[in-house]
View (cartoon, rainbow, N blue to C red):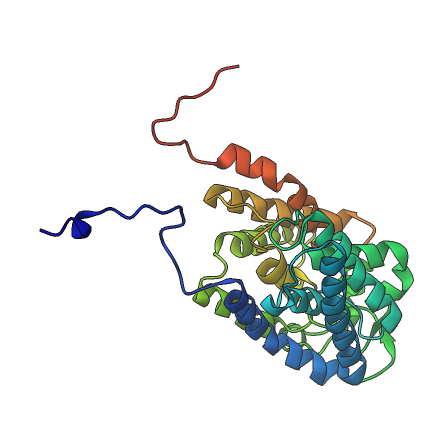
Length: 319
């Protein structure tokens, strides 16, 4: 027998390969965002299109410049910068001045991503870093909303709920379709659900974070609504009337800044839900999705540390 046939080939890991890569995964995320993108363009028109274009273009250019300055490989072809810009745009008011959108995008890419080492090293969701930066810098502009198919200012469903203006609340069907005021990409529940289900089907996200996040918000607001004598419409408003679905499916599930363990993801989702409800009901802002996810991003390493499985054959260390 030929000795060549009996030779063992040794190589370093990984030994299991997949046709999926960063580029294909990011492409699927873009596909998942298309329904919400189309709805936003229909209801908010040219102003929304200009904000979206500004965020995407500035995100790509910022990433190129930052990577060249830091002497790293330019990786804009993986679409991650495009997604950062698009997700940030989805979190912004349609009438936000374009220069503010550009500044927020630079903050998202540089502060939220590149200063940590680029894709795979960021501890926060970059798009939410950009939104938090803008909200802290220009709170009035970030909380001025326009009505769908119009240019007049209006309140968001969460804002009306915060002000206890129940008589002026839009219907649940309007929330489901997206014919309400709000951030560019967060108003249509059905569009975001379609996108989220697509990501679940493709295996890019798991069910634990989005479903525990949404479920926690639903349970807590149902209890609060029951105590206040409100109907089933109240928790449904919290589910469909703000940025919960966008955050739960597209931001809390960020592969880098969320836990890697199964139990950790459940804890993460519950934590996001608790903080979101706390901020919405007791905080100064009517919306709490952005800060709840960012705060849970901070404790992600701690969650992973205490929920990781025991190594087979490992010996527990004693202090």
